[in-house]
Length: 49
Image (tube, rainbow, N blue to C red; front, side):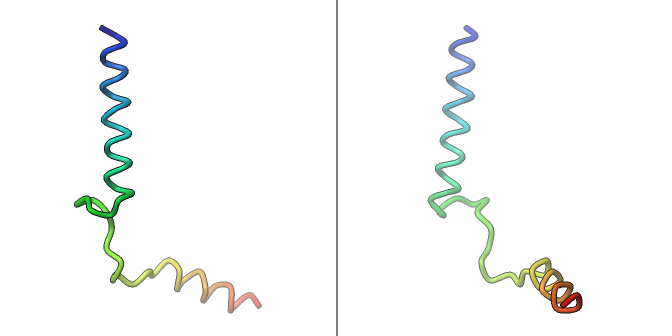
């Protein structure tokens, strides 16, 4: 029974990872959103230079 549960969980994790990697899943992030963290990091680096 433990082996069955382990294989089931492992299979679901691998399926989820492959689904997100393919880019067809619902949970894959949008690419048209502005990355504010990157802008803030760049501004901080410019200020320190």
